Length: 168
Image (cartoon, rainbow, N blue to C red; front, side):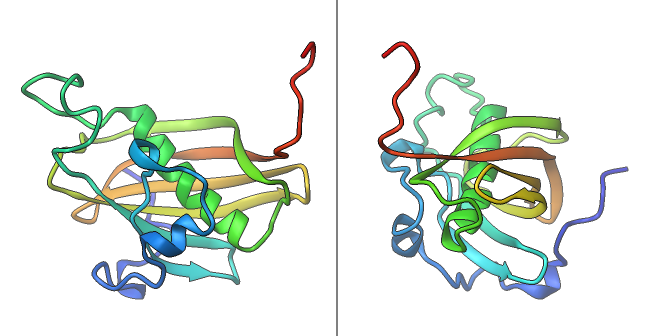
């Protein structure tokens, strides 16, 4: 049996974003085909979490090749969408600092059902643990028609624009 949603669907309206795509772009750096968050529906500053969505269309960059004649949203893109939801919250409320929020890892990721074009993917993320300026751990979940389609935990870490890779 899947875990309970991090947020009750009664606490937000899936058709009334509090942050639209332009407001998300002011916080998240992803653009073009890498934008995987279309709106934010709820911000929970008490439990440090948020709910947002991605409207999955037949124009997604992966539709043509994953899988031909049976477009299925790739698991890695589902995880990216959840990371952008958590990243929006972490950056908007300056949990970690840095110029960007990068993946530090993922744990206990489970895919429960496929996501197809024509659906709204509702994304929930909630802070589990914070080491200020070092690492944030978020729980995340994704839903289509209020059915959980994936879940897991992710680690986010601050990245500075002027950071140089070792041996550069």
